[in-house]
Length: 180
Ligand SMILES: [Zn+2]
Image (cartoon, rainbow, N blue to C red; front, side, top):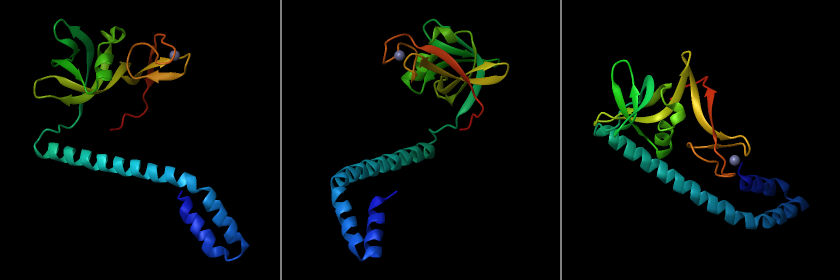
């Protein structure tokens, strides 16, 4: 909601003592104006970032670097000297993570030998770059998250809670929707 437009509508519609009250109200809000302008700049900066990201993405697509995401289901294992590997019925994929959080999750011993579905892209070097990790139980997908029950906060990767420093729990949340 844009409060300044409401303010001007009040002024034009008033034409009596109420206009003065509105003007006083606007003056009282003047100090908030600086904050609003500042957040406006942030929004514009975000807009630029978004625009640049789109340009980079389009450029990547044009030179054939943007590969559509795919998914593979198999067993999460680890190989000496290689790291996490997904064993599927057809082939084994050495795994990389799109983020370090994802890569650390792929290395979580609690997920070893588990049936997982990984969404991501196949890289030219044969590795599979993981963008999403799901565990699979009876053909159903579960989202993996790290959670601190004490602080009620979610962590991005295995380890200790940023708040209380206690180990977080690995939780699996049933997925009802796996949109893009
Ligand atoms: Zn905690």
